[in-house]
Length: 173
Image 1 (cartoon, rainbow, N blue to C red):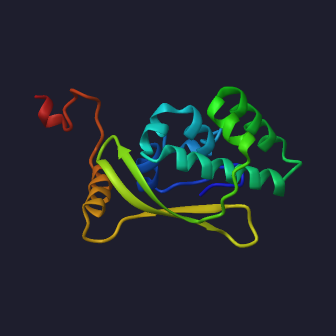
Image 2: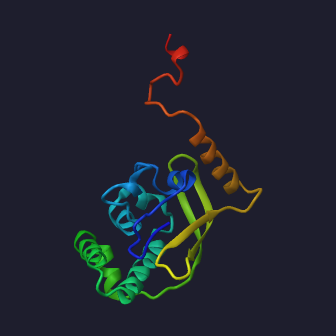
Image 3: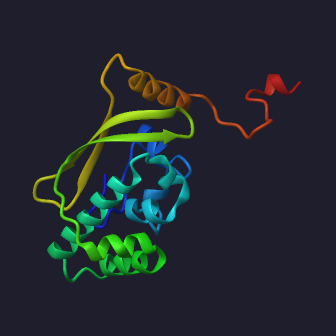
């Protein structure tokens, strides 16, 4: 779940593992929320996830343009756009082009660090009478992509240990 600034308000365990496993799960409750636009342009881990990074970046910039038009007096939004324009020349170039897109369905090709290449449908659902949006990622049942999501979900159920550390106390003996 994101707001008009693309700040992450909440995510479920699988969505977190899919898009931002390198960021703490509790991060949306932090003072500085993860932000999809900031991660997309400034976080190399998140950027590397998208095989179609340029298309995702254009959609993100277009959404920020729409947010600025709808919330012209939002100082946090203004700061986000300004910071991205300073820190990312790619963002600055895209922002200057003023892309316009309102499509809510995409096919996303991802290179995920745990399950590898996966192609997912991505729908963005705007909640009525609110500035929040919910991103849905899914695969067609019975495909290798669906198997990859299942594998990722199963990986969340296993206890996590540091590399080289036995998973169970019995294994340490």
